[in-house]
Image 1: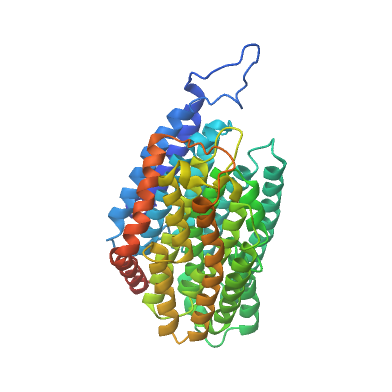
Image 2 (image 1 turned 90 degrees about the vertical axis):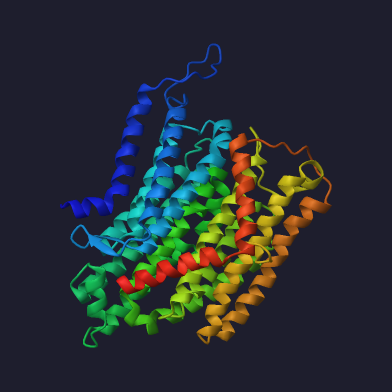
Length: 499
């Protein structure tokens, strides 16, 4: 290992070492906690050092955000003997992932504290999942991609089932684990077939070999089917979406946000690395698969969401439809505008998702989770600002101007029309019109229905302030989207040129 390699993986090394040190240090940090007379508190229910771990985790995430932003101007490099790559796109996506985790932790603090889940091991597992996302985003080898994928997924399985007193949470954890293992098997089997044909695990070498017309195309096609199936599960698109609604509903809202936020960015990076960076010569095979997955996701996701009364479950089907839009942006190959539109879409979708679940956690309190439409009824009468936050987030998810969701959907639709996929653009618009119904239903409930109970606002002042800033960003980027769009386009262009 040379100094060049260390520089390339320095942020990941810092995150790994800091996470291990925080876990060990938390054992030796005592904190004052209220105790119940006559009840002995064990190590699993006493938040030893959690404030210490939380504070330094936030500092660590801020450092990582600025570190990756500072590297966005660097040229594309491949380190660790071809296992790891650092390019403008990976640095942009990793900065966004770190930001999403940072915001998620701030929003979740009070929610977790009220449910005795605010513990050092919870935060450490989130940081380890983030490390997996960073490795996945920068993977330049099939083994690195799979290692990052599993490092991201395994902590998530545990987090979903961490509320062991809830049957729904445990059930969701088991479903997530079993289906996740099945999808990982699909992906690994596809990768093994890819290796069998090309004789290499390096993405660049595979790209060169696949472009050779003498390869065994039949075996490659079978491997591609398994790879796309594994990718579809990680993105949560139809027909590999069966885990999404159950996990979103069964997991604690804080964990749902961890799954719905940063991992979507990493899943998009995996899709880009495998299909664009590696298997672009096979676009005639994987493009029809993406078309089918995207159309099914748009239709099934939006139609099924109409019947939901649980907001988290509704947002799960919404996420399925939103990922359909992301996949549509991947269809116009050799078009950096289309790829950058997908990057812009996934980043802005995560920004909106953070605000949506942040609102649900602020409206939850000890012994009560705000998860249903009944819990949002009449919110404007007692807390008009938080009702406005909900309105902005719903408008953004529906793609209504002047929110950022409109600019994101417009970018993907423009890429589809430019790529002569007009029929798909029409289907996407019609599906969005269907989706607008259940988003506007939430707005109607907040503004026009009578409250069924007293809405209580919880959360720290910092969390409320950050939620307000989140809302302003959703509006500001929607009004002036050019800056973020140009950043995404520049990162994509320099990444494609560097590869």
